[in-house]
Figure (cartoon, helix red, strand yellow):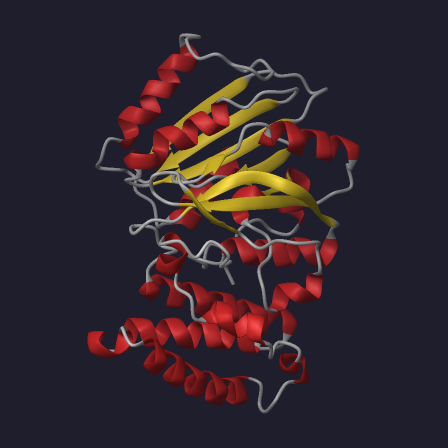
Length: 329
């Protein structure tokens, strides 16, 4: 279905997937149901799933090939592979190497695009051709799709990226030439590959925020962004990147990491005691911040406010159970 014209934006979407059959069909449909004056280059990079994922991928391939799926854009080029990989970043790199679009993005196999997202993106890049990175808003949803919160975004501020990633990955899109110019994804990263990419693009190219919801970011018990063990690894990776690019270990990131470390490493009877976790995490963070920054960093003084510290001690599971005003640090 390679029915696209160079006159209209050609958007490549990569979906890395592994044993996400429970959510994959909804993710795929959210892409191939998009309507507007653009064409879609959709690539699913499956890591050799052992559940029903490949059957789901094949089903939509057949529907498109047999023209049984109602295509409402200027064409869909649907491709997929299923083979063992080294994880999400490796799968993304494989898919992005195959990409043919002038605009690129990735959508994880448990997230979804909202109706009208790609039309909004296509129009924005047409009207603002110098944009290197475009991002919008995203809602958090639970496993059943129920909305449980929103990701805190805002106008682009490069310096703010040091201590807070306000760019939500499933609502972010970037130009192919910009992606190539900054060197693509870093294959040594397993969690913060998106943050690393935003910083490298933000250093060199215009990044723009367009208010409006573009995606749903799903939080569920099997997600690697919900468990304290992987949240600790994620926060450590982001902390190392902040130090690399900004020559600073922001206190919010240090506190985040210490908080997740305490939750994951303490015995169960202590890990369930919020006061004990907070006290230990604060002592850990103060000591570690002084070591990493070789003293007190003046930039940290701006981060010492009630709002920041309230966010540090909320888990993703608390978001899922109804604390809808909490946002991702």
